[in-house]
Amino acid sequence: MRPSDILLGLLLLSPYLFTVYYILSKFTQIDYFTMFSFISLVTLVLSRYSSAILLSLMLVPSLICFGLFVMGIPYPLIGLAAGYIMSFPLYIILGAFHEKKIENIIISYLLSLTLNISILYASGQTTSLTSPDIIINLMVRIPRTIVGGGQLYIPPLVNDVFTILTATSGIALLFIVIRRQEPEFPRSSRELLPLILSAIIILLIAVISRVWMYSYIVIASSMLLLLICVSAILKIVT
Amino acid sequence: MKLTQRAARTYQYSAIFFAIVSLMLFNHPTIFLAPVFIILTLTLYIVKGVQKLKKLNEESFEVSMSIKPNILSINDKSRVRIHLESKLNDRLKIEVHAPLSEGLRIDSGETSWIGRLDRRDSIVFEFTVKVEKAGLLRVGPLQIVAKDDLELVCREIDSRISGIMYSFEEPVRARGIVASQVPVGFNYPGYILHPFIGVHEEYRESIQSDSLSLRSIDWRRTARTEGEEVYIKEYSRRRASDLIFGFGTGLDLDIPSFGNVLNWITQISISHALHYLREGSRVWILNYNNGKPVFIQLKLSYGELVSGKDSIPSGGILIYLSRLLDREELNFLEKYFENTRFKFNLLLIDLSDVVSRIVEEKIINHECERLRNVASKIQGSVEIVKLRDFSISLKRSLASK
Image (cartoon, rainbow over all chains, first blue to last red; front, top):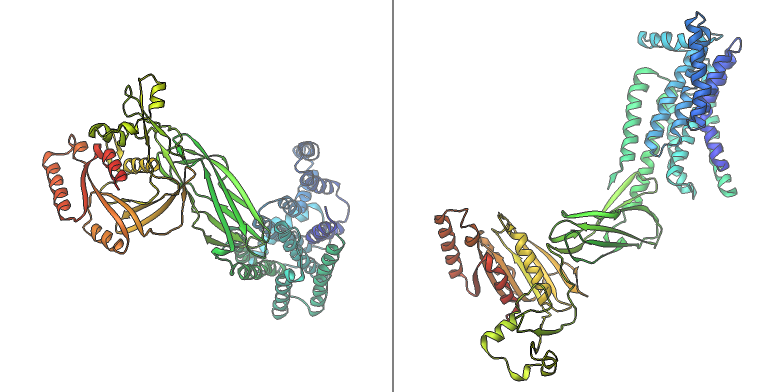
C-alpha cells in the first residue's frame, strides 16, 4: 500500500474515528464490553471476515453475554450492543472499501455518514455517557426529537471539528473513488480541476447558507489545499 | 454520448440520499453538503469526459476482422480475430463487442474486449465460434464503445466492420483454388472432384452432343488406366466475374422437406457460386426487402468469402430469384440497374411441384398462370423454374456466357 493510500484512508475514516474518540471520552468509566465488541467488529472486517475471528471474538462472547442476560445480568449484553453500534459506521465503510463498483462505495459512505451523525447526536444529548445511554438516545430520544420537530444538539466545537473532518473525508472519498478507476490520478494538475472547483462551489454554498462560521471556512480551505499538496508531494515522491 | 450505468447509479443514490436523509431526517450541514459535493464533482468530471469523447469519430480507429475458415459446415468451429488500432493521441477505455448472428455460438474466448487503449496502440483479441445453422452467417458489425478515464460517460462508435461465413448442411471437401484436371471415368460418368456438381455440366454437354474431339482426350493418362477410364483435357473452368444474386419476394416461407425456401435457395446459390467462380470474383447478395434493397458484398479470396466494401458493381451477371409478388419489384430493378452493364437473368421460382400435396389444385393453377403472365411481360432472359429443378437451372445460368 502506498503512503498516499494510507493517508487517504485515514482522512476518509477521520470523522468516524473522531466520533468514537468523542463517545469514549464522555464515558464516566471504561466499559470493557463496549471496547471489546467495538474492536471485535472492526477486527472482523479487517481480517476479511475470518471464521476464527468470527467464532472467537464475536460468537463466543455474544453467547456468554446472552447467557448472563438470561441469568439476570444485562449490562454485559448492553455494553456489547453499544460497542457494535459505535463500530457499525466504520464496519460499513471498511466493508465497502474493497467494492469494485464505485456507486456502492458512495452509497455505503453516505449511509455510514448518516449512522455516524446519528451516533454523534446520541452522544451529545447528555453530559456523561454510559452504554445504556447510547442505546436509549439512539433508539428513543433521537427518533422522538425528529418526529416531534425538535432540534438535535451537538456541542459547537465538536460540531465544527466533525464538519471539517467530514469535508476532508468527502474529498478523500472522491480521491479514492477516482483512483480506483485511474490508479495514477492525478497525472496532472488539470485532472484535479473539477474536484477543486466543486470544493470551492460547496464552500460558497456553505457561506451563502451560513452553515459554517467564516473562520472555519478558512480552515476547511486550508485542509483542501493541504490535501492537494500532500497528494502532489506523494505523487512526486512515489 | 450517454452516461454509464456507474454515473447514473451514483447520481440516483446521491439524489435519493439527499432527498430522504438530508431533507427529511437531519439538517446537519455535512449530511446536506456531502451528496451535493459528490453530485457536483461527478458532473464536472462528466463535462470533462464529454469534451474528451466529443472529438471521436469512425476514423479514430482502424478495425479489421478475419474469420478462418469461413466456409464450413454445421458443428464446425471457426476462429475470429479482431484487430483494433487507435489513431488518437489520448488514451481511452474501450469496449469492443462482436455480436453473433443467429446460428453462431461462442465456443471459446469472449466476443468482447474491455480495456485501456493507449495512444497509437492496438489490440488483438480472438474467439472461436461454433456453427449451428446452415446458410450465410455474420459476425458483427463491431460495436465500439469509448469511455472517459473515470468511466462516467461513454460514446458508441459505429463500425461497419463485419465478417461473413457460410455454412453447409453437410461437411464438404475443401475447394481447390487452382483448377484441376477432370477425370471422366466411364464407370462413373460425370464424376468430378467437386462434390457440389455431381454430374459435370461440361461433361454432360459433351456426351450429349457427341462432340468429344479425339484431340481433347488425354491419351497418355487414359492408357495408364488400361482403357477403363478415359481422361479428357478439359478443365473445370471457373469464371472471374462480378455476380449479383438477388433474392426477391415470395420466397421466405417454410415448406415440408425443404425448410425455409429462401434459406435453401441461398445455400444452393452460394454453393454453386463458390464452385463456378474463380479467385478474385466478387459476389453481391441483393435482398429485396419490402422495397428496401440491402446489398452485401462478398469477395472470393484464397478460397474464402470475405466481406467487401459497400459498393454496387457496374457490370457482370445478375441472377435474380423471385416469385415477383411485389408489383414494384421489377420497376425497382430496372431503375436500379439502368446505368449498369448487367446481364440480367431472372429465375421465377415455381413452387407448384413441392406444394401440390398441401395446396388446392385451383390455387396452384392460379399461381402458374400468374407466373406465366408475369414472365410474358418481361423483356429479357426469364425462366420459370420449378423448385426441384432449381439447382440445374442455376448451374445453367452460371455457366452461360
